[in-house]
Image (cartoon, rainbow, N blue to C red):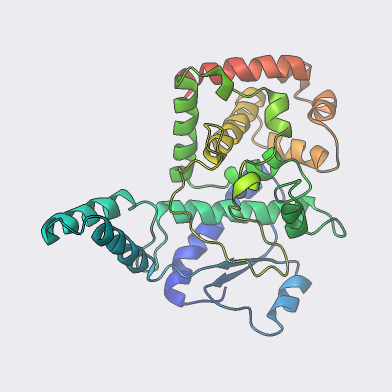
Length: 310
Ligand SMILES: [Zn+2]
C-alpha cells in the first residue's frame, strides 16, 4: 500500500473483509493487491507488482473530499439563491451536506458508500485476475470497445463478482432497490433470465462508471456522489441493473443453498459456456427445475415474492 498511514489504516480492514467475502463466494485465494492512495506508482514498482501477479488499484485520497464538495455546493447555493439571506443559505447547505453524509468521505475516513465501492472494485480486479486468462483482451480494451463491460465474461457476471463483495451498507441499498422495483408493480422492470444474463451494462451506453483496472492502468476511480442518478433516462438504469444482479445472486444462493454457486457458474461461463450448459452439468440442476426455462419461471416467481423474502 502506498499512501498516508492515516488513510491506509482505514483501507486495510476493507481489503481484509473483501478478501474473506471473495473466498466465501468465489473461492480460492484472491490476487495480491497493490493499493495506491492518491499517489503515483513509484518507478519499478509496477513491474514488481506485475511480477507478483498483483492487481493494482489506484484510488484518490479521501482527504479534503468533504471540503471540496462543500465548496462546490456553496457556490451552487450562492448562485441560485443569491437573494436569500445568508442564514437561509447556510441552512440549505447544511441540509444538502447532511443528505450526502453516507456518500462523502471525511478526514480520510471512507464513507459507507466509498467503503462499499472500494470492496466492489476489488471484486472486479480479483475476478478479472482469476477468470481472464493471460493473452485474452485487455480489460480496458474491452471496456472501450463497447461490447463488454470489464472482462470477457458476460456483464451480469462481471458485476455479480463485484457486487457480492460490497459492504452491508451497499448491499442494503441494492436490496431496497429490488424491493422498490418489485413493489412498483411494473412488470417491465422484471427481466427474464435470458435478458438479464445477456444484457449490456447500462453504464456503457452513456457513462463510464468504475472501469476495472488490471495491470498498467492509470485510471483513477472517482467517487460517484450521485449513485441514484438516472443514466439511461429510464427506469432500467445502472442502479436497476446492480439491484437485479444482486437479486440474481441471492436467488442462486437461496435456491442452491451453496455459497459457492457463483464460482461454479463463473468457471463455466468464463470459458464461454452458456447458463444452460452450466445448468446441464451442475449438481444444482434440480434445484433450478432442471432447465433454463424452469429456472426462469422460478426466478420471476422468486422476484415477485421478494418483499416476503426480504
Ligand atoms: Zn462494477
